[in-house]
Image (cartoon, rainbow, N blue to C red; front, side, top):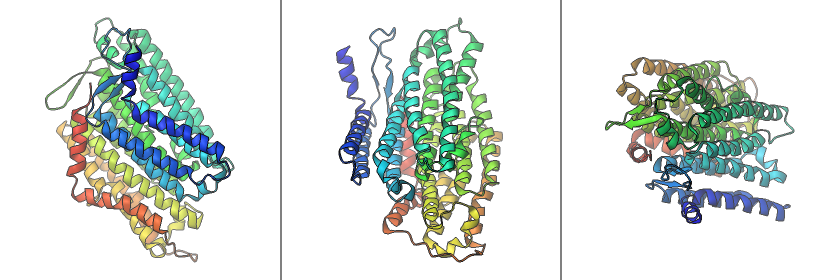
Length: 503
C-alpha cells in the first residue's frame, strides 16, 4: 500500500506544486503582512513550475492511487493521461494570464491588504480544478468540485463593500449548494446500484442485465445537474449573469474560462469512462445502452446557446453581455461532446484554447476601459474607437473572434465544430448552431457600432493603455490572428491528446 502511494505521488507533481506554493503564499502573507507586493510574483513562479510539470506528463497514461482491495486492481482514483494534461495546461496558462490581469486591475489593487488571501484562494481553485480533471472516482470528483466551488464563492464576493458583489456571492453559494447536493444524491444512488465509486468499475457493472435502467438514468441526470451548474449550461445557468457582473472582473474572466474548462473535462471523462463500451476505428463512441446521453446533450446544448444568445441581445452592461455570451459558448462546446466521437473532442480542445484567448482579452479591454471611465455600460462606449484607438481595435478583434468570423482563430474553432457535426450527419443541429452564430453577430457588432458609429454626448478623455497592458493584449491578439491563418499546430496537438485518452 505504501509503495503504491509513493509511486502514485510521482504522477501528481503538478498538484503537489500547487499545494506547496499555496502554503508558501499563506506563510508569506502572515510573515510579511505589511508588504505584500511580492505575492503575485510568487504566484507566477508557482504556476510556471506547475506548467513545466504538466508538460512533462504529456504522453503519459497511468492510473494513480489504485485501491489494494479493488476487485479490478488496475483502476485507480486518478487517471493521468494526455487528455487531462491538455486541460491542466489550459488551466495553468489561464491562471498565469489572470495573475497578470489582476496586476492591472484597480479592483484588486485597492484590496492590497487582502492580496495574500486573494492569491491563496486562486490557488485553492487551481488545486480543485487540477484534481477534478484527473479524477476517475466519484468521491474524489465531489471533493475536488467542492474545493473549487468554496474558493470561487469567496472570490466572487471578494469586493465585500460593493452591494452587487455580496449579492453575487450569495447567489453563487445558494445555487452551488443545491447543485452539489443533487450531485451527491446522484453519487449515492450510483454507489447503491453498483457498490463502487470508480468510473471504470461502474462501466463494467452497468453493462449487466440486472441494472435498473430508470434508477441509473435518474442518477445520471442528477450528476449532470452538478456538472451543468459548473459549466453554466441551461437551465442551470441562472447564477452566471449576476455572479459575472458582481465579481471582480478578473475573477469573472477566470470563472468563464478555467472553471468552465475543468467542468467540461469532468463531463467528458464521466461520459467516456463511465458509459462508453467501445470506440471504433474512425473514433466514434459506442455508449452502453442504458442512458441516451446524446439526446440529452443535444437538447441542453441547443437550449443553452439559444437562451444565451437571445438573452445577450438585451444587455447594456458589457460584463452581463459577456456572461450570456459565455453561456452561449458553453452550448457550442456541448455540441462537440454530443457528437460522441474523437473528432468532436478535437473540436472541443481547439475551441477551449481559442476561447481562452478571446474571452480573457475581451474582459481585459472592458476592465481597462472601466478603470478610466468607471462604467461598464455600452452607452459609455460611444465614440470610444477614436478616444482609445488601440483598445477599440483590440476589442473589435476579440469580438469578431468570439463571433467566429475569419481571419481569426474563432473561425477555426467554429469550423472544426461544424465539421464534426456534419461528419456525424447532425445537419439539423449544425444549422441551428449556425443560426445562433448569426444571432450572436448582432450583439457583438452592437458594441462596435457604439465605439465607431455613435458620437458621444459628453466629452471624453483619450485612453492610452500602459506598456504592460499593450504587451498583454498583444500576447492575446497575435495568437488569435496567427492561428486564424495557420492552425495546424493546435489541431495536431489536440489530435494527439485525444488519441491517447486513457480509457
